Image (cartoon, rainbow, N blue to C red):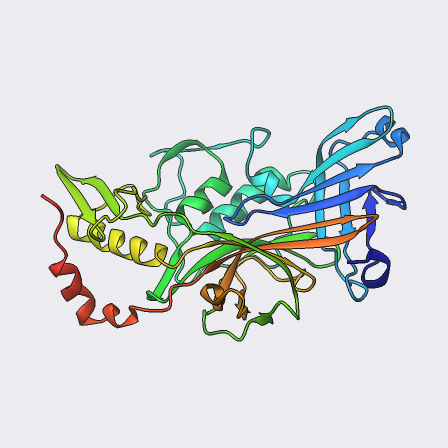
Length: 358
C-alpha cells in the first residue's frame, strides 16, 4: 500500500516534528497490555538528545487528517548506533505496570476494601502517576457494569494493571457471545485518558472484509482443542473430559484459580472447552480497519476459505509504516455461534449429564 497515496503520517518527539524516519511499527497485543511504538530513525544526531521519558505523538493520517493522535506515549528505551537510532515508546498504561512502576502492597491494614477497579486506578494515578504532572488523563474514567469490588482482595507487590488483568469481568449473557471489558487508552488531542469499554455484541454489524475489499492476505492455523480440565476444589479433585479424546488429551486452562464448588468448576470447564472448539488463530493483512479497536467485531466473507466465514473479534493489531508503504495486520478470533440454548434450564441439565472420568 503506497504511503504517499493513502497516508501522510506525522511523528513528533517532544515538541519537534521528525520529518525523516525509516520505519514505525505499532503493536497492540490486546489482553489489557501496554501497546508500543518502535521507531527507527536514520539521523544518528538524535541519539545525542535526552530522549528517555520524552513524549511521542504519532498521527497515522490514513485516508484523511487525524484530529487526534493514533498513538501517544513516552520513550522507554532507545539504542543509538553510527547510522541509526532505534526508539521504543509505550502508551500510558506503562505507568500502571512494569519494573519501574511502584507496586502495591495490599494487606489487611492497607487495602482497597470498598473500592471498585476504577476507584483503585484513580487513587493510584492521583497519588503516584500524576503526582508532579498529568501523565494519565482521568476525564473519561468509568466503572464496569456491574462494578467490580476489591473488598477482600489481598496481594503484595502487584501492579495496578495486573489487578485489572486478574479482575476485569466477562459478561456471559450467552455462550455464543462471551464479552469482556477492556481498559483502553483514548486520546482527547491533549493527553491520553483511560476508560473501561465493553466489547461489541457479536451480532453487531461489523465492517465486512473480503478478498476484494480489505483483505490482502489470510493466514490461519487451528490448534488441538483443549479437552481435559482438572483443578482442586476444597479437598476434592474436579476432572472434566469434553469429548472422547480422539487425538489424545489436550489440557485446558480454567479461567479462575479458586472455585467454591465442583459443579462451578465443571461448568466453567464446559464453557471454556465449548468456546475453544471454534477458535482459530487468524491473521489478516488488510488495507482498511486501521482505526478499529481491540474487541471490535468484523465480518469475514471469504468463499475461498469457507471455514472462516462469519463474525470475528479483533484480538490484536499491528500497523507498520515505512518508505515502501503501510501494512496493517489484525489477529482475530472466531466467536462461538451455537449452544446458546444451554443457558437456560437445559444448560444445567446438560452439565448434570456430563460425568467426570473415573
